[in-house]
Length: 558
Image: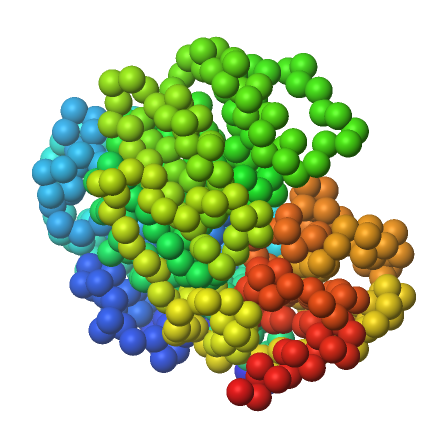
């Protein structure tokens, strides 16, 4: 079977080397004419000047722990490794040590931007395959097609050899080879290493097509869809008050993190929060780690801001106590909050009570812009606290209607259990798998079989799988039994890449490539089903009693 690595030649002397075949485009059918003009110019030059020992992968996103990086072009060579290239078009210049593009100062220099994206990709590849890609290195460069020469003095941390100017385009092959050959961290890649990298980055170009690569391809397409759908909404943050509604999968949390990063970059002290604790920790890990960008679950964050350390929780604390007592304690200590905020963003706002809104107002700077952005899904209102209307009169309303998280089959099913009025533009995806399980032991036995199929047979990473239950008792039973020897852990314990096993309530707002929803309750509420089913990106498995499976089958037939 043909593979990319098998077709690579091995040039040894860049000065005497003759180009016999052109570089390989990945994927081969990528429509180059749809690339942005400066990227297209560079890609065409690379394809025409580099020989067939090179692979050229244009435009893809790198979803890191704290943010998403965009890499314009990635080059792969069996003898030299990988190089990520950031493309900056237009008039680019360095003035007094600061980078400018078309007369506007850049908050992050292009070399730093390229380096950050390259290093994030390196780290992700190493974590993905510790044995095979343990020592992989990703070099970086910046292409400036609109610049013939940089006449000004470069900052001391910028190497001229990492800049590809328009004047370098005629000898692009020599420039790239020189950069790769001169970095001691670069090293040859084996056939298995190259194929592993390709399977991860471009599963649509995988010659050994498997379930895992299909799922990754679906996720990549949906991530692009999310960004494209939300891009026109970014500038809404110029308003003071925004109230966004959208069903599960429409990109609310993604939009919240983008707004938070934009506010932070404008110099606004920003709070990004939600009620749900696991979701709050996820948001904190998805944005820049800075004292001026605070993210986390609402109650815990309030206590940290007010330096409340001795709060006592009674053994018989019920939901009403949790909805009132912690917030009363905060208001007594609110004067201790010294560093207040310009912008506050509330995700999953349907979980909030109207009684908590005065608390938000105490967190604003007295003379700041006092921007409040709230994002909600009324169909996921599990707590019924009553926040159903915008909080101020001059609010900008917007409804998100495109599902960009779930495959079409998953999206259509989830709509049946809610009032969601969305449409999916995502890939069709696999059929939802239904498995009969009427008792806890039946659930564990079915889990053993499914986890073996997913992880052993189809090479899906355990960290891509989430098991959701309707009740804590079943969650704890699954964790105790360790189905098939596959260790399952709660969200907080899953940092090691284990399978997440949680209740539906605690994982509201979160997602995984594969979700197994397990319950022995025929009467599980539609709202809870909607929340649980919609956590799955590409693969959904439902384990439950006959009555529940019949409910789902009836929806699928209508």
